[in-house]
Picture 1 (cartoon, rainbow, N blue to C red):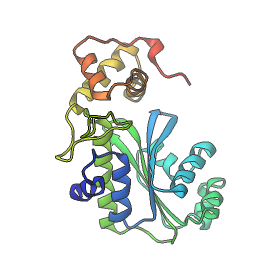
Picture 2: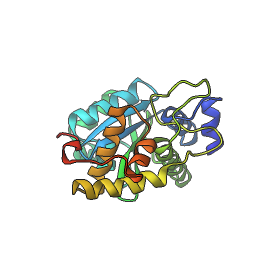
Picture 3: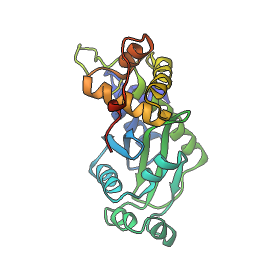
Length: 236
């Protein structure tokens, strides 16, 4: 699976875009999108393979329902063989007709999660109805682990020296720094008096605001060169 993702990167630093491209091939779907959670109730699209995948993400966030929203909230897989079925319409009465109008029939959403921390979702769609095979589900789960490592990677610099606008790692494998991110999340949780999910949201928001990789910021927290205060929590 890693060879497939690296092949999609074709010499570039691996990013969520390449994970999505690999998912389309490995899981035999028509489109994919990765969204990241900036806080428990707020998500932002990191990449979509096409206009339909982007539309599905936008409409789910706008309407507050859909497989990606459900997977991100519950932390479980949401596998729907036909969103236009009575069961799909009952489950998402507002979103299901939107997806069907866009020509989408099947949707599959997987949480991107590390322990108790939910980082976002990988959402896949097909224009034809039908379930995933067990092997396709396993491949999607493997790609979710890849996406998580990309999001937590320390290195955001491409081979030409330019800074990437999204988490990436060299083609040799996952980047370092993930353990420090976990440690920093726990420390920030104590400093702010909040749960791990809110602490991670604050850590990620600060990294985005300061324009530094998440792992670099985490290292500052672990080394006690940076301390968080209650006003660092993202506003609702």
